[in-house]
Structures are given as C-alpha cells and as structure tokens.
Image 1 (spheres, helix red, strand yellow):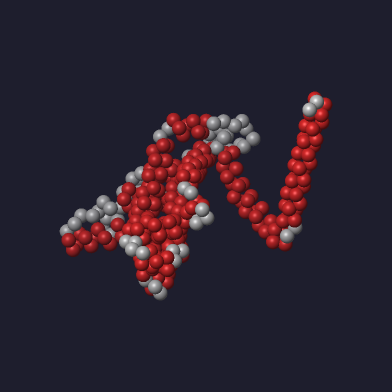
Image 2 (cartoon, one colour):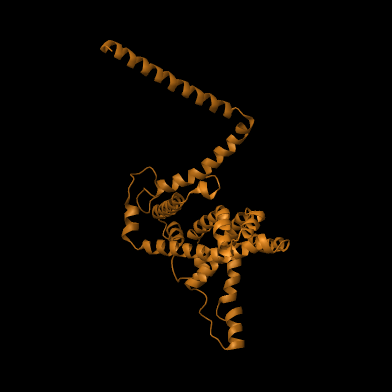
Length: 314
C-alpha cells in the first residue's frame, strides 16, 4: 500500500468514526428529548427540581460557610481553610471518636436485639405480629425528647428504678443517669424501629418453601441461617444498619438528655458552634467533615459488598 493510499484510508476511517459519534450523540439527544416530553417526566420535573435545590442548596451553603474566616458571616470575602486547621489542631477528634464509637455500638446492639424479634414477627407470631408492630409504631407519634425524658424520670436519682431498688432491695442505683451506658440506652431505644422494620422486610423475603426444602435435604438450624435466611434477608439488614448508623452518628438529644456532661458528641460541638459561640464557619466545617467521614465510610462498606449478589441479581 502506497503512502497516499494509506493516508486516504486513515482519513476515511476517521470520517466514519466522526459520523458514528455524531449519530450516537443525536440518538442520545433524541431519546432524552422523547423521555422529557413524556407526561410523567413533565409532571415530575418541577418537584424533582425543587427537591434537588432543597437538598443540594443547604449543603452547598454549609460548604461555602466552612471556607470563610472564623466568626464572620460574609460569603463575599476571601476564602480560607483556617476552620479546618483549627479543627485538626484542637481536640475535636475526641468528639468524632465518641460519635463513631457509640454509633457502631448502637448498630451492633440493635443487630442482636432486632434479629430475633424480626424473625419472630415474620415466622412465629402470626397475626399477633400486627399488634406488636402497632405497639412499636405508636411511640413514634410522640416526640423523641418526651420519650427520652420518660427515661430520665425512670433512671434519675430517686426515680422509678433507683427508688424502687432502694426501697425493696436496699440497692443504690442513683448513678444510672448521665453516663455513657445511659446514652447508649437512649440511642438503642430511639433507633430500634429504624433497624427492626427493614429487617422484618428482609426476613419476609425468605420463602417458607425454600426453608422447608432445605430442612428436608438435611440442613441444620445453623446451615439454614447461614445459607438461606441471612443472604436473602441481607438487603433489609444492610438498610437497617446504614440507616441506624447515620442517624446515631448525628444524634444530639440522646447525649444531652441522657448523658448530661458525661461526653460531648460531634453534634453537640456543631450546635455549640452555631449557637453559643456564634462561629458559623467552624460549625459548617465540622458539619462538612462529619458528612464526608460518614459518606466515605458508608461508600467504603458498600464497595466491599457485592450488592448484585446480595440483592439476588448475580
């Protein structure tokens, strides 16, 4: 092949490639235009845009505030990373550590509490499960703070539990409230439904006929749990764990009402920066770091899991 023929062939290939890319672009644009002209897309467009602005707008505003000088409110000034430097050099890591540790402990405890309860609600209780579900849902209609103050009246010195223990058994239980275990109790109590109901949904996806077939083939209880129930219920368990962890990580009322000054969680520091200290840039920087750390951890965990296999698409 001569040089002239080769150059002509190369030019033809490049032209064909350009035409193919243009055809694909036109095809994507046509399909997108057709999708946008559908009645459903036209009706859903404004609410989706409003939700996107309502979700992204505050996050972008918080991120912008985290980059202005400390104790200022002017977004038009020079940007700085001083707030992040202050957070790293000061003792805020203790609050982050307490928050992550208590959120992890809450998830572990709720896994142990909710799995047997969810199993009983889906496989054992029958119609009585509806009554139990109702009993668990009704407290959700009461404010979280009011429910926690109910525990304060129960655990405070001279309250229901310490007073009864001292009167009947001579035991001194006056130090139950305003401790780390009291905070954990509050977290477990408040977030139990957020772990239980996704887990109930996951276990309800396990067909009874599949369990019966495994038993007929000689599977023992442990094999039934490991090979059948746990993999099929994993979507619900995973959703419950993530939901509970994120909510517990950003919790505020539990540590303030049940823990007093026992420890300071990161949500306490964020609230103090935005209110008492009037240092919105530092509060915004703490919020951004919490979002990044929580999001990074969640995505790292999800990256280690084969979601297609868990969801049965593998």
